[in-house]
Length: 589
Image 1 (cartoon, one colour):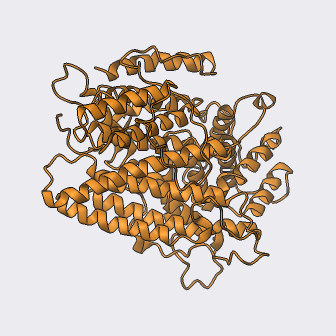
Image 2: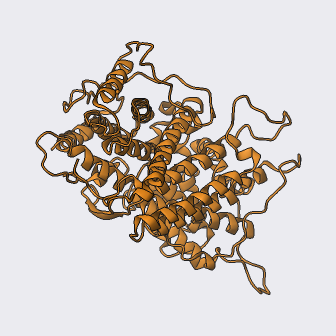
Image 3: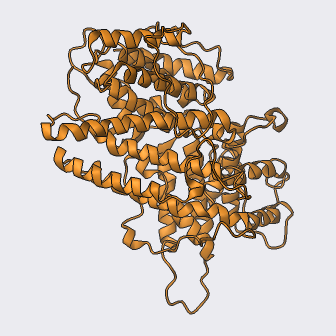
């Protein structure tokens, strides 16, 4: 098989937005482009492997997210009358409840009671009105809260959650445009929340832009620094400054393979949020939620090191091995240092029966911490998934083990996402998990295309986990990006099944593929060929039933693109079939 070389950086113009977009080698977009190139090389008659002919930035772009411009929505001036609906009061409480019972548990950016109090000042026209920058922040929080609402009769609210979210985002943008270059804590928080909305809408390019705005604003007002030698009181709220800075610190730049806007760590001496003893019964729940911040910050530091040491400059295989070993030690040390409340849940559960106030937020924090840990392990060891140069015999053993670690981490990430998705309603609103799912599936497809499977059982396990990843994406079919990702994975998977696995005999490969197809079709396997069930992530959640799926007859046909299961309006389907029908036809050429 022809070598494609390492995963490369990608610079492309998104035809939907005409934006020039860059993705570094550590990004899922670059890795997916690499896998699609390997997929295209499997087409009969293909002489040389090459990159996809169409833009992945277009394929994975959500054209439905177009917030209203400043000219189409009324703005709120400093002397204007109070809106008739009092800042969407009737729906605002629902969306704020959704935010504070969901995303707030993993990004405790606000002091909840204080934030509610300022909202009430808006709703009931108190004499001391919050600044206009808070109104922009308020709309951005509502927009995100709307996206993570787990269950709602949207018909009673007039439109679907995405329509509400985009309307509210338009309100925030109108005020931002009106404020211009205002710099205060609320504006920094507003930019951060806007980046989170775009992240949930699966538009990481724009999320990166707004997170950069947030970081620059934060640096401009100095919340990354402790106040030194001030005789007058600090105009910033120290607690809010600390929370805001450290959540900006761990934002999305690494996931795109781009530099962040933070500068060296030596610039930042802001204190971490105050820690509390979890065994103290009368500590407020708000302080319990803050316990996750230091561990997320430390993992973010390791992320920055991975990006700089592995994906910025080229180096020899020997030097790369040394760097991966050092970074893996840091990752293992981070995980071993997690306190008991953040360790993966195991069955049978062996914990104190004493109430730990954990029913509503600890599970969310555990999932986020360990999903990011697994994703970072994939990226760390993923540097060996495509090496163009020959590997010296002295390095073959470690490189092989590192590749297996990457594959195992991808399988565990898919298991964690699948089982959490199947058992927790809050997780079903986190659409950005499709990015983790797509990256893990890309790792497994790369393993098949590069013939890294060491046994027929290992090959079958990889195919089972790719099936499981597709099932997760199917559950997010409401999102166009998830639907497009399903198409890409299915097409690559159908070709991957025709790749001869050099580590296996032809007979082993045939048995593994036949068994996988029979299992997908619901046909019982014989006792001699039955394979072990895919491993789950630490038995964190009881095994859930996997929906049957078969790609045995997928081939290069487009018959599987059946619009009937997608309950969307006609405009969305027409837009999808106009663009994607052309895109998917190009993937096999």
